[in-house]
Image (tube, rainbow, N blue to C red):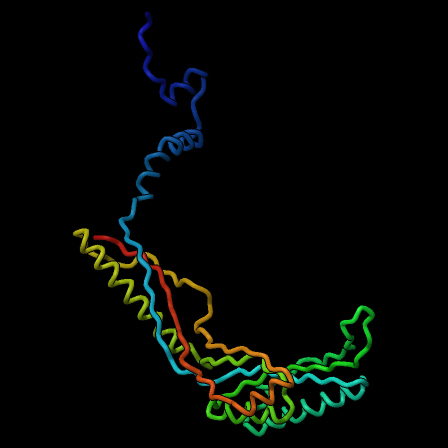
Length: 255
């Protein structure tokens, strides 16, 4: 049984072939030999604790977005359009009287179409004209008067009312700061239970969609017949408070 031979060194391989290695070849061999050792040094395991922090603050809204519409019907197409144009013009005048500027008023394109009966053989009943108006009211004290005047001007469809904060950045920043403090307190408590000391933050990320405030929304629809009942028994619409939330994830080093 032959004894096992000693491993052949890289330089001996070149000598056995009758030539000496170049400096480039030696450098390449040394690089391959050194790679495993260097990989173990540059990737140390971090001792981390990762937590999330949440915060929510509530603020009073300072503006409302009203989405209303005017629907008209007549046996003649031209009459339906003329009637709709007149009502929309009155509604826009009411908005201007309430102090709403042009940049806070948006109107949709006028929609015209025939209206048929639901019989087996449909009959043409006339023509419908419809238009939607979006208003941004920045003085909530005028909300009830504005809504009443719009209905009196010919608005017969109310699609929704949205109360919101016009400049939520300051409140969002405050909510984020509270969330960071909550995350740090949670991490410190968890580390203490494990007999560890909390070190510096390693990584931080803000979670959740970029929608810094939740809108208190009221949606309803009123037909021409329902409008009269609504006007006769109108109740104040409470705007409530807007909820502004923040969610963060932070990783801390453990000492």
